[in-house]
Length: 326
Image (cartoon, rainbow, N blue to C red; front, top):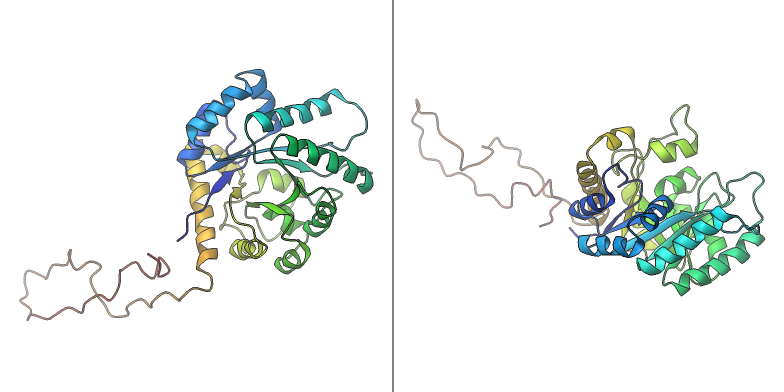
């Protein structure tokens, strides 16, 4: 199977342990990148400093650094909190050599006009470009850019340093299908993908936002066709790194090292399934009774049997499980 770069989103690697321990746990679990939230950035800037955070990331071998999500970036009023968030994101993007800055759309009622957002988007895209980062929009179903297709049109009409992030939960809960994604998202704008799994329907008593916070199942353990989702975005030209966003009470209760290893293994299994699609079928398992291992086989001591040549194996015993791949 192919090797794939995985990126742990901020919710996937959040915890109470010191940040340097959590960063090491991320890379030891097999992730090549991570996403830092606004809270992470403010805390690092006020304590260790962003330069020291960069050293931690380098020491751990982190390749991909993503920042966000930033909201209210379209505001025309001067507010200290909004300016502080924008300032720390841009400073961190420069210091940490961030790959992407992720922003969200407006979820207020009534929402800001798309015209106002478009002007602000272009300004922020230029600022992000100035610090070496790509500006990326993540559509959420409860926002004014609630579908992948609508958000893709918004991004395509804007600055070339803008892109689109497709989160599996937000995309599918927003009403998109694999066919509508393939038809409605331009390959030129697709910049990031996040994998998560979910139930067939949002659990009773939960809003979509609640589910997004607490109902993100390990890839491959829910009801969605994630291998098909992977193949669809690959068809649009996306390839690496694969964001992993998982969050349930059970996962949060696990030690962070165990939770990260579990998340990485589950995601790689989904990517392996997508890789294997369309390949040669696995060989059929033998139907005749045979010992599990010829090496461990012993004849009954009380019976003397005539010498019989055992059939030779034609392939590794695990070939059907591994899908015929070495």
